[in-house]
Image (tube, rainbow, N blue to C red; front, side, top):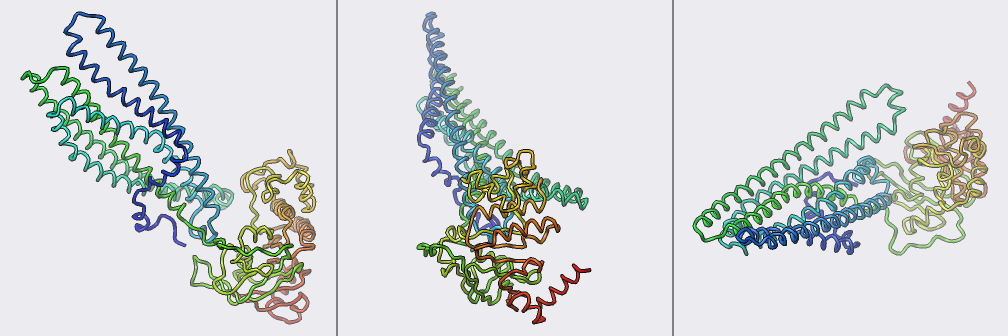
Length: 593
């Protein structure tokens, strides 16, 4: 699994990133149509102004009919009102369209990244992904809304003004239009530079955001080690890198804008000089030259604005490219085209046959080597061994977070690769060592896997998990907000909420990953009591460092260096005098001391 957005080859594949937004636009044809209608109306009102000025100059001031002049001013006021209403409606439609598209895009990207396999997150920072969801979508919102509207308006004005310039004076128009290639080619060249530099600035800012997210979420650790200065130095350096990258992009945009304006208005001045000569020679009226002048100013101003908008659209293209890369990522774990249904009722049987496995990020190092074991329905099997032996990896394969490199993992007799991953995980509940608590209420956290659960069923699960007493003592009971990552709760309280969550799921297969390893004696007693109730009448696989927690297991598998080296009950393994006996002697002797 390669890191997203890291190679030039990936960047070159995206020829026109903004085209990726077209399906979103097509969803809202009404908004698009409304925006185009009022955009065209506003441009038409603007383009009609020079015609009125010409009539005023050539005819109005040569007559003493005040009614004629007044009628033209009334017409100008009416045109101004049309322009005002059309501009207001254009703004409403395009901004609404931008907000709607970005909301859809954010929802789709978030929904997609939640389906990506853990292997993706092994090599990509979550903070960098969040940056794409926020900063990049904001850039796109600006482009789809205001920037795209301004671009289309200026494009219509530019083309319309050029057409009217030709109608007004073909001779002067040929001179003006002949200068366009000298203007457009530099814009295209600099636009590419702006896009590449904008992409670099966005990538650098995302890296800074990713580190900020890590540091803020680990504030207690940072402060405990007096690491504020080191964290500030690292983040400050990342921000400075982002600033330098952004400044480079700004320089390109500024140069692009300056060159465009200089070329455009220099060509206008040159053309008007020829027009002035025609007026002096009597081959053109002053009104005609004035009309041509206004149209040339409109065309030049629109073309100049397009140069600025081009830079903003280039930034949006870079943001779209980054989001497109996310959407293009495919989960390493895919449901089969024709999944095999798991048998009903669920039993909770687990089988490993000759399983080898290496993490994709470390493909050269096998974590599991030839694992074979069978867990019968209703049986409690403990897996113990030193750190790095591969214990937690076994749980990841059962949940199908990864696929075995070789061999077969089956649940209830069905190869997990042949089953629908969601159906598989519906049969599994897990209580991890590092419990995930979301910012929200205790009720919502317990009901995370069953969002429609009633208060009564949530409370029943909490009672079974030995959590109801401490929850009721909180200010708002089950509605108490626990803060980000559950920082207001103790380790034992978080663990009991996780157990309540597993109880509420009521799955036939229970996975316990070091569920009591980080608890004090009192909390461990409460959590162990809750676990005993949870483990009853269901298949349980227990990962444990503390051997005291596995004494009641039906069988114990002892792992070392990716292999199962011993198997038996606590007593039989002690009598064998192998690795388990040595680990037990170290732990129990230390506890006795």
